[in-house]
Length: 260
Ligand code: MF3
Ligand code: CO
Image 1: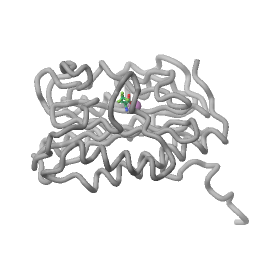
Image 2: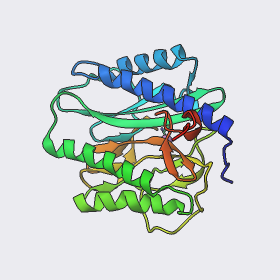
Image 3: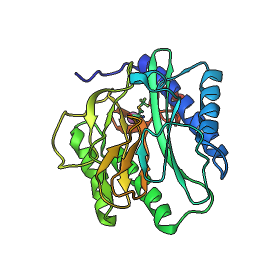
């Protein structure tokens, strides 16, 4: 069942996502050679709690930390720890927060100092694929239209599109229906409706699509050890199309147009 959210619920979902996006900003600013992924996690946890929210990932199926920090060939769910970032690395930062019972979930992959041009392009293209997915998410479309739009962007560049992990509904739980794969064909799955809230999260690899999970039970890594990128926003479907939550774009938040 896919829950349609009321305006009052959307306001709380907006707030949860705003806290997540501000936390990602703070973490991104701290990314530099020599900084450990545990340092980033500490910044994130402090920021979320300062804003009166709670980290959403801590305790989720036993997950121990606030962030997932996924370096280079790590795709998602890397656990923050003593690893120090090095010039030329990329680090995926995935963050979730719960505010007044409502969840926000977003991620981005950021460079550590100067990175190889092909890696910079991977980041750029994966971010653009997220935009394409968001543009495809509108009432009247179907869930797989999102994945079809995301996948089309990867195809042009020959990137591997990770199929083993998917986007998802977001609401009073971190993961709700529907599942949102990053591949087509389009025209399949549930009809999208105004009031739905979903996280779209493309994961593209420089090499092949296949991934494996480390012995820690969490860290997802490309099988061919190629570099991977991950970007995620939680979006709300409005009658006119999708808005990215946490950015102030939600219609009800804007003062009504006067006069004209
Ligand atoms: N942001 C991730 C997702 O969208 C959640 C990380 S899993 C956790 O699925 F266990 F760390 F919470
Ligand atoms: Co997610």
